[in-house]
Structure formats: structure tokens, C-alpha cells
Length: 574
Image (cartoon, rainbow, N blue to C red; front, side, top):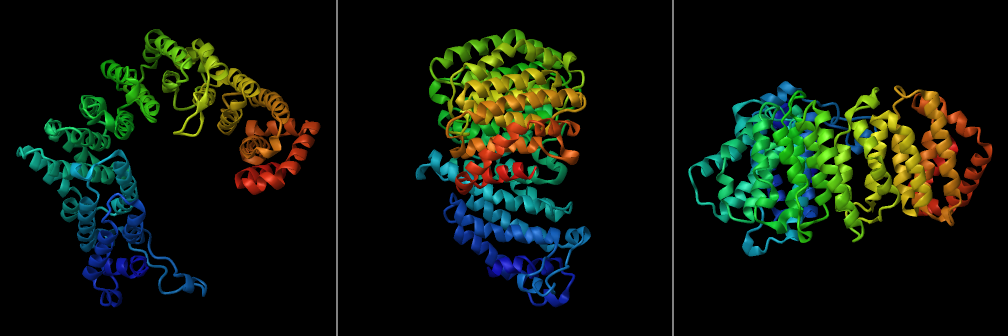
């Protein structure tokens, strides 16, 4: 508590050095040493995120106070303010504070020591590595707060990039690729990525990303499993590059997919971050960029045959990201991408999905859904009939219907949703929002799924609410949209109200009343230009049944689920 109090006021004041009366009372080096000792003593178990959180919070609070200024201490706030409020350093004062790079350098060195991967002799199991990832996630918040303070002075450059430069120098000189170097290299790459990704507008991240290209094949010399971990962190660092660097960085990453690292047991930890890195780098490509060869490589990775024992909970999400990255690689040639998917990819995916369905698997089905989502435009397209994605979706609509109405679905242990039903419902809502011409078919399909499949209630209601929130009016004509939604809402309400024990189902009540409350909003947020609300309120018998259900369900479900109670009360208020 004492260090936290100092970090919230006197420590940052003394570090800026503009108030001699404070600086004279504070020994900056002693406080820094105490805070570093606090991190060290609470981080002996590097993988324990809970132990590390309190220690790292002190350093995060120091950076936040330097950036945002002080606030009242509670006892002073009760009296209307005090001497610990109204202090705010300017950006010039922060840039001129020479002690800040020193403080950050000490903090960074402590993180680099504590957050190394455990040596193989200690048994670096998946559980141990996952705990380390949790601890790093805690540290990432502190580093992100300090990244906002980093300046352009030589001292700051030394504090931020010296570890990466030293690593590059060691690798270039041909140091033996042993475990000691591998552990240090892995944590340095993680640290550099975290810092580069946290900078505002990624200013200066080009230097860090370029280091990946300089490392070249040095990382390839490390044995498994270190090669897999090093490739993973290097790809994350490469993803922070700027637009003109990205083609080379993407090529570098595509040459080092996780399955080529020789550590299939680590795919659960490396495959999804790799796919995220690829997508992030592809997003930075210029809008007029188009490279069919790169797109084919991404497609090959996304659709590669994988042995069943190598599949894991994030496999589908990783493939979806690779397919989405392909969308950015193709640039403006969306028609070529859609034609290629229609003729070469989707037929085989559909066959694989149908074959898997008999075995209770949904991997191919979710990849098929991801492929359809990958071609959707970023925003509503007023000429939806002319957009290649609309043509593709209409051609594949029978397949989408099959996924929602007939394919078996089971609860995913990863996301807690019925799959592939939930993924298909989310894709249909996304398509209806950006391709308005699909709206009638989309709401009809979601309503039909809700009527026919008990498991479809939650995902379909959630998808319908997403459509309602982002309904593109215009280009949709508000009156026609209001008529369509009012008829659909009446239909699904009648189906839901006939369900037995509905008043004892908090999740169903939450989704149902949330949708109705959003539909009855007034003012600027009112859907369809305010035309949907009066149409729904005119259904007096339905409104009466809804209020009756609310009165019956609120006492019991309200106690069991605060979210359900809030949605019911929001509906009553509207």
C-alpha cells in the first residue's frame, strides 16, 4: 500500500522534478529499488499471475499518474480537494525527465528475468506455459502504460530497444543456440512485441519489426520445442510492421508456420497467435495491394489436412483468421477471391462438413462459415446485388440453411456455445448487416431456426439483436425494414412464449427481453427511424402477454440472474 500511495503522487512528482519541496523529501533510487524488490519477491514463481499482479500494479500506477496526473486522496476528496490533486505534468516535462528511462530500464530488466520460459529440466508442460502466458498478460498492462511515455531521446531508445539489439548481435555472431540463449531470446521477442504493439499509432514499431528480418534464419537453428516458441514470438513482433514492410514480413512468417516447427504438442499455444499475427500484418497492406500467390499460400495453410490428434480448441479460430487475412491480401480483387472460393474451395469444404457431421464434429463446417465471412465488406454496401460477396452468399444459401436447420450441434467447451449453430447464426447476421439485400432471407432463416431447434434460441436471438443494432437504414428503406422486423418479432415471440418453463430460464429471458427492449427504444437510437416501436406497441395482446411473463419470471429469475432482471426491467421501462 505504501508503494502504491507513493506511485499515485510523490514518486511521479519527484521524477518530473518541477517541485523542489517534493523532490527533497523523496529518494528516487530507494523507492525504485524497493519497487523492484517488490516485483522480485512476488514473482519468484514467474508463472503465478496472481502473485505478480500487485507488484506490477505499482509500476503501472506510476506510469498512469505520470501521464494523467494525480487525483484526490479519499480523505481529502471528502473535504472537497487537497494538495494531492490538480497536478498534471506536460508532455514536455515528461520528455525532459531523464530519470524516467532509467526507471523503465530497471523495470524492464526485472520483467525479462522473471518472465522467461522455464528450462526443460523443470518440465515446461503446457500447464506451466499457460500460467506463464497469464503472468505476461498482467505485465502487458504495465508495459502498455509505460509505452505511452516513451520519448525519442537516446536514453529512451536504449531503455526500450537495447535488449532486442543485444539479442540480434548475439545471434549474428553465431553464438551456440543453446537453451539459455533460447529462453532469453524468447522473452526479449515477447517484450519487444508488447512494447511495439502498445505504442500510439505504432510509432517507431518499424524498427522493431525490421529486426525480425535481420534475424533471418538464426531462429531456425534452435532445436524443438524452442524453435516453435521463438517463431511464435518473432511472428508477433513482425505483425507490428508498417505497410511498406508488411509484404516481406508476411513472406517471412508464411515460411515458418507452427506445424513446421516440429512441436505438435505446442500447437495449442502457437497456432492461434500465429494466425492473429498474419491477419494483423495483412491488415496493414495498402488497399490497392493484390497478390494471388500470397493468397494461395494462406488458403493452403487454412485448409491443410490435419491429423485428428493435432486438432485443438483454437484450430477453427486460427483457420478463420487465416481466411480473413486472405481477404486483405487480395486487395480490391474481391471478385477473384469469391470466384476462387465458389469453384475450388467451398464444394470440398461442404463435402467435408457433411462427412464430419455424421461423426459429431464441426471443424469443416466452421471453416466453411469462416470462408463465407472472410469475403464480407467492411461496411454496408448500398449496391449489394452487385457486390461479389452477395453473389457468393446467394449461391451458398442452401448450405447456410443446412448449417442452421439440419446440421447437428453440440456445446463447445472453448466458447460455451452450440457449434456450428452459433457460428452460422453470427455469420448470417454479419452478412445481413453489410449486404442489406440479404436481410429478408437472413431474418426468415434465423426465425425458422429458432422455431425448429431448441438449441437455436440463444444464438438466433443474439444474431437478430446484432442485426437490429446495426441495421443499415439507409440504404434499406425504413418503412420496409420496420414491416419486416415487426412481422418477424411477432412470429418469434409466439414461438418463444409457447416454450415450457420459460419463466425459469434466465438465459432465454435475458436474450428475449434484451431484443424486445432494444426494439422499443425511442429517440435517435430507435430502430428503423422510429417506425418499429409503434408497430410493436400496436400488438396490445402480445404486449400484455409479455408483461405477464415479466411479472411471473422476475421474482425468481431476477434473483438468479442480474442480467436477465436488467433486460426485463429495460423492456418494462420502454
